[in-house]
Image (cartoon, rainbow, N blue to C red; front, side, top):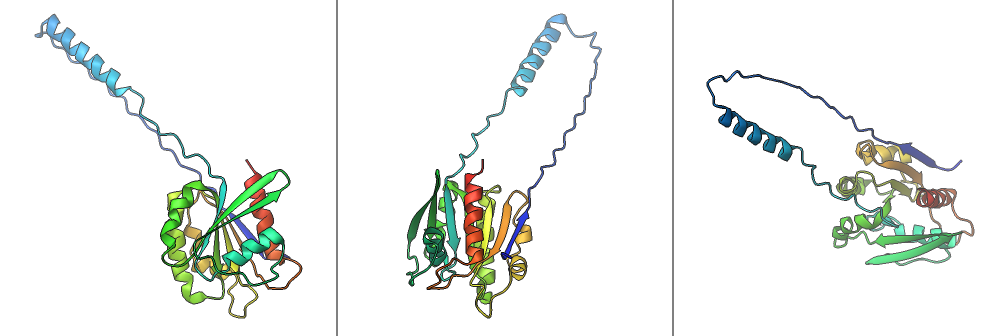
Length: 231
């Protein structure tokens, strides 16, 4: 069975509406009609001003890219290579800057943008969120000492777009020290990512020389294609 787990957490906004109507009548026999007419005109002006429609900003246009992020050494470049070619025939060099990959599936063209995970490149992550339709975050599941760092950066990203779907790849599942997706879910506190995010967690592994793509990698690729092809 594929090591995949999808947790849909669609939030419902709770709206509270309430109104209190209060009418007070004053009997002002001592006031002249002219003064009362001026007061009524002033009140009409205030009411008209209060009823003006507020300025509503246009919603952000949905992005078109799959943003591929994660700490350095998580295996992002190898996974992208497998997504594009179906296997990993040779070692790939870690991404030192930006890596763009295009995958065509029938009439669908998906643009992946990988940004390196070294400390000097992490500042660029949030700047590219506005172009993303989907965020894929890769974690080295065998490097437990850096789970807290990965959690820190992931939770910094998510509030910038509360409705951005998230696919978390628990990579390197073939290593002896690898943590399962349940442990990783808890370590990264994914239960607190926000109600609006559609969240999927999939275990993956990439081995050089394998002619067939790992089941988890294929599941992740298929899920991303499905999410990008949906409305």
